[in-house]
Image 1: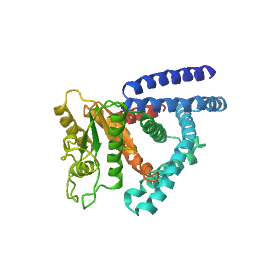
Image 2: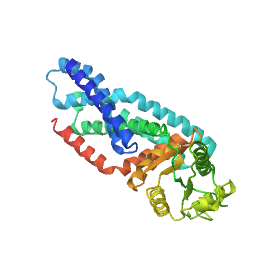
Image 3: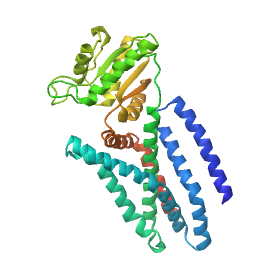
Image 4: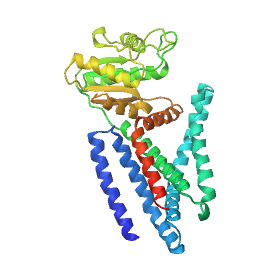
Length: 346
């Protein structure tokens, strides 16, 4: 068992080296999340190897199915505390969000996800921990999926933190500003105002530090309850805050983040060949925006604007769900492997 632990530690070190190289080359690639997930899983296995050896010594005649269930229980035990801390933080921030922003359904998302997780653990894990007679392939399959979800959740959270630590270079030709809803009077709401203010500050910093001017590309179409497009509203705000009309190239047709980036890419490509681009959005939105920028063929660095502490945890929970759906093929393959792993232990 000591040999196994050494092998696992070596594997973790090699994966950390791979992660460092991958993150440096392509910080928003989903493979970085996958590598971190595997590292978390191996860390749990390093700790779990002792418990597993004890189980085998005391129960030499147990089935492979029960051994697999024991391994998965150990994974869950190690991951339970950090995930529960995340759930607690989500619930606290949701309570503040509800008090500040009102009782809307999407403001309960963090509490709903936390309740689902805790109920899954209570119903499918704890009561069956020491009852070998009720261990079935289906239970092992569910345990596989929950362990996978826990590792992926923690990996996305870590990646969301890491990408915010990247400092953009002051060599940009264009700064794309991702839109979000405006008021019925056409004014910028605080969230969007924070993005535009951050873009203005970035351009000023670049002019001061690198003596290079960047052009603005405010991006966003007109929603059903909006009097003008988000791109136009941001354009007016930029012009009222010192930008010249020739420095602003608004994009006014997009309906979502993917279209924001695709349509803005067309604008910057028309203006300059191989442009250097920064994309400004709110901090919780940076990770997914970077992934979508890569899919749109846009080689860009992301710049995050700050928001209120109680707002971003709930918003980032929505981002995690969106990231899961963006890579549904990967998750479908993992589900198939989990099913295979559960049933081959019969």
